[in-house]
Length: 234
Image (cartoon, rainbow, N blue to C red):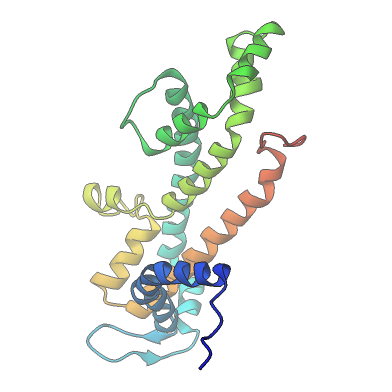
């Protein structure tokens, strides 16, 4: 019998790549993909852990938007936190990274520090030749070259802000008078204290949509202020 033709190198490399990638893919589907899709199903049910989920259609979402005043309170608290924490984290992270080669101060600062290492020294030298001082170099060289890093940290900060939970859970429990009742904490209470798993799943999907929309807005506007080396426009 004639031996089969040898497999093309590109095909063999592709199969090897899929083989090495498959454990991670299987793990994602088993531990993240399936729970995410299952939570979508639960959001249309009444489920309290002890009894089987009961299909109720859009009722959870209807109650969420028309009757649950604490939903809007917790969402507003979370948006307020995001609006304060992301700009402060961005400004302080950049300033600390500029002032120090320092480790373990903050996650965003480490990313900014890495971004600073990628700014070509020739740009500072050219700015010095043109008579630019330290402040002008910071605004006209450092900040523009650092905007891709700022863009990344803003996205991560927004997504992290929507998940704020531990601070309020440990220190205030959502009080006083629900002034620190963040969305994730309210979702947790609905799921594990009130045992309204279907309702909590609906809240989770609403949060996903809100975070996704805000992220898309930031991405859409990034073309106006993010500068990439070699491009002529921000």
